[in-house]
Amino acid sequence: LLVVAPISMSGKRTVNHIPKQDSFTAIEKFKLEVMNILNMEIHNECKILEISMHAKKIFNDFNEHIENRLLEGGEYYNIKSFANKALEHSARLAGTLTLFNDVNAMCVPPEWMYAGITILKYYLNEHLRLLHNQNQREDEGLKLAEKLVDWIDRKWHEEYISLPDIYLCNFSNKVRDK
Image 1: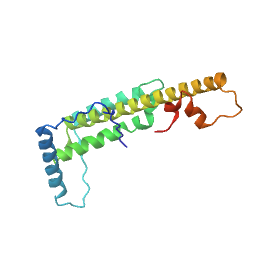
Image 2: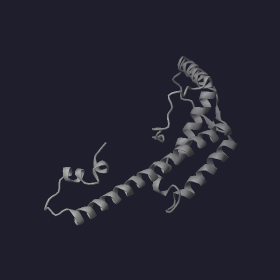
Image 3: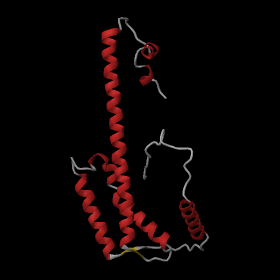
Image 4: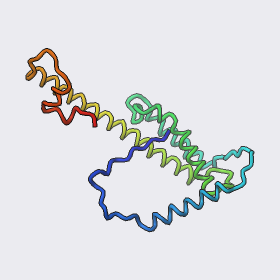
């Protein structure tokens, strides 16, 4: 699964933003190409794409890149469940790009292998960014919990405390679910 979670644009959007005509043209071209592919006569034979020698070298170099970063302490160690599948994903992307570009292609060329790997590196970076953001939120939650415990120790003199009591203290806007 290739996951992306865009950075929020809240507070940064303008009402006057109008997409460029090039965007509409590119989307229309993409739509027409997909429609052409979908309207092709389909044969029930399995097509096997070979990988060119140069594309295979790029693929093998990417394998080394990934493997070296999966070791404990490596860049991808904390996302190894996804990073372990990086080679398969990049090859699938390269094959898809190859066939989208030329439905009769017999071989994945270097440029599409490189493109598939480039896309996959984006997803690896997204996993790292999302993990970092999750860790930051967990750290913020722990800090807030520590502050709440400290506040209860210093200020609360009753035997029990309820959520409404917490809502009324200075933690009200941080504790509530949105």
